[in-house]
Amino acid sequence: MTKQECRIPQDLHIHTVFSEQDSSVVPEQTPELIAHVDHARTMGISDHFEHFADHAYDRYVDRLRGLGLRVGTEVDGAASVGFAAELDFDYYIYHCRDRAEDYRAIERLLATERPVIIAHPHVFQTDLERIPTDCLVELNNRYIWRCDWASFYGPFRERFRFVVSSDAHQPNWLNQNVARRVQESLAVRETLLFA
Image (tube, rainbow, N blue to C red; front, top):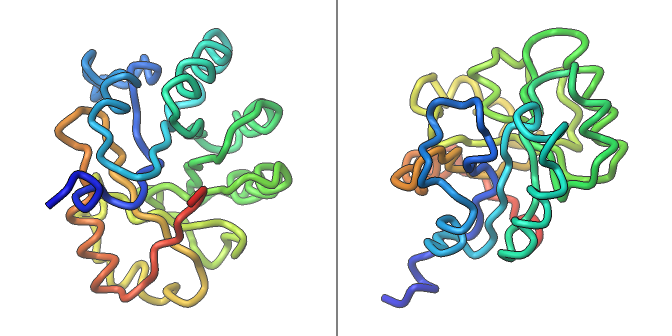
């Protein structure tokens, strides 16, 4: 089997050392390591916006683009959306808790005309009925096993486009085995962005 055959189609939810305040991220989880491992045909880094944007945005973008990686960010709810929408990203990973302000803030991200991926919605008790259908919904390898995924995601199989992500914070998390099994069981097609 060749390396090309072993690689997954895409992984857009990967953290690196730019998620400085996340204790799950190990020092070895650098953008260079991700690029070297090359586990997916399309790879995007989506570090926590609140951890780097105010002091390291330019360095973040330059480093990722220099390695041929897609530049995303993970935005933690409504409070940071205004600032995040002003900066240039290829896509947004969004934490939408079950709060009116978080649902309203989605429209601001969608106005950027960049893909908006709703991150691990079952973790935040996101009401998928309130999510605009222009958003994509993530099947997240890190958390998907912690819910009754058939009951949570099943009713929305036809409503949304789905992406499969690792949410890797460490090199050994660079896989999507559980999320891909859920995707297969739900019989949903993975939406490939930037393909």
